[in-house]
Amino acid sequence: MTRRKAVNALMMALSTGAAGLGLLVLALILAHLIFKGAGALNLAVFTQDTPSPNDVGGLRNAIVGSLIMSVIAVAIGTPIGILAGTYMAEYGRFTKLTKVIRFVNDILLSAPSIIVGLFVYQMLVVTLGHFSALAGSVALAILVVPIVVRTTEDMLLLVPDTLREAGLAMGAPRWLVIRQIAYKAARAGMVTGVLLAIARISGETAPLLFTALSNNFFSADLTRPMASLPITIFQFALSPYDNWQALAWAGALLITVAVLALSIIARLVTSKKDKS
Image 1 (cartoon, rainbow, N blue to C red):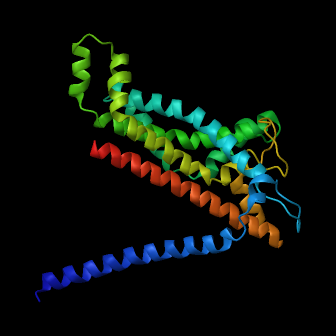
Image 2 (image 1 turned 60 degrees about the horizontal axis):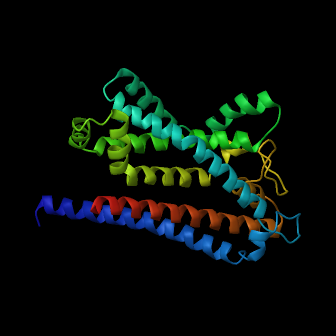
Image 3 (image 1 turned 135 degrees about the vertical axis):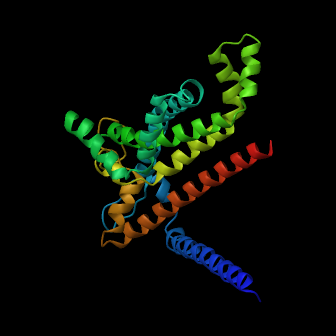
C-alpha cells in the first residue's frame, strides 16, 4: 500500500470514528432522556399545574406559558426579520447599510442568549418595575429576528433575477414582483427559517430568567411573571424532591421531542423545495 493510500485510509477511519462517536453520544443522551422522562409522562403533566414538593401535579402552566411567549415572540420577530431580509436581498443588496445590517445580524446570531436577557431586563423589567411575560416574549423575539433575517436574505438571493426581470418587463411594480414572484419562489426556505427560529427559542432559559421569571400558577397575564417549561425544568432538576425531578425529566423530553419534530419538518420542507 502506498503512503497516499495509507494516509487516506487512516483519515477515513478517523473521520468515521469521530462521526460514530458523535452519534453515539447523542443516542445515549436521547436514550437516557427517554428512559427517565417517559416514565413520568402521564395525563396529569398536561392537565395540572406545577405541584408543591412531594405533591401530585403537572406542567400545564409551564407548557401554556412557553407556548404563549413563543407565539408572541414569533409574531414580533418574524415580520421584522422578513422585512429586513427583503431589504437586504431586494432593495439594498450592494449598499453599505446592508453590509452593516448583515454584520450586526451575524453578531446577534452568535451572541449568548443571556446577553439578550440582560438587555431586555434593563430596558423593560427595570423600566416597568417588574418581571413580565411580555418582556420574556421580547427577549425571545430578539433571538428570532437574526435567524429569520439570514434565511430570508439567503432564500431571496437564490431566486433567479430573470424571474424578477420578467415581472418588471410586464409592467408590475417592484413590490408586486417581490410579493408574487420572489416570495413564492423562496417561501419554503423562509418557512424553514421560521421553524428553526421556533426550535431555537423553545429551549431558551437564560433570557427568561431575567425577564419573565416564573410562576407556580396558571396565568395568561402578559404583564405579570409567567411560568415556562425551560425555567421550570431548571428549577425542578436542581431540587431535592423526587416528584419535581421526575417532572423535570418529563419536561425535558417534551422539549426535545418538540425541537426534533420542528427540525424534521424543516428538513422535509427544504427537501421538498430542492426536489421541485
